[in-house]
Image (cartoon, rainbow, N blue to C red; front, side, top):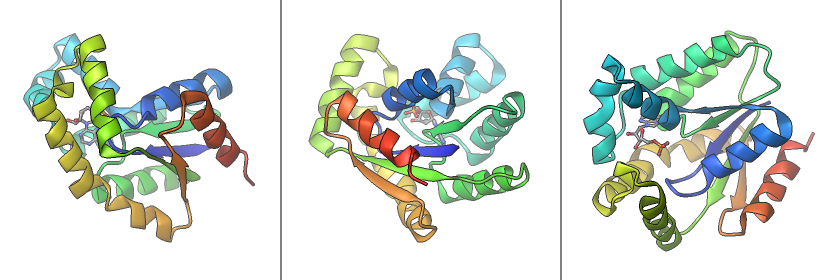
Length: 188
Ligand code: AMP
């Protein structure tokens, strides 16, 4: 199962991905987590992306595609992958298709978590207080939301046209969203 979990920052992608890891043994591939780990390790890559991330802008397609490719190779034979925060541009979506095709596989489902902008801002404000993620500050959040609307939302028709897109109400509580996600994964 190759699942793309899709939605704006704060929609609950990471929360749902972690549940699927626990419940189904899928591998969560979060490019945001990978980039944060690179920063923490002090690597060249981490230094390169730090400013871009703190401003809330997207890092280059090349960087995130390479991270995903590396992870696919390191986790061969996994029962499933959850792509969380990737793809975020059309070029990334096309690259993902090519990476999977060359491994005899494909995107199986795309689940969009729908949450309105006001609720997103409330959630991000709370996360900023709890976790202190630099890019959860209001200025960077506005840039991230704008990047989502301009660069990532155009992927919706890409996946809709392929018949892969399913929508879930991300305003519901975590268990209800998880139930809806599970039902979609279990469809034939
Ligand atoms: P996230 O944790 O998914 O919200 O990602 C945090 C930040 O990492 C984003 O605001 C971007 O700067 C960067 N990032 C994560 N994933 C991607 C991606 N697929 N393409 C470009 N930039 C990304």
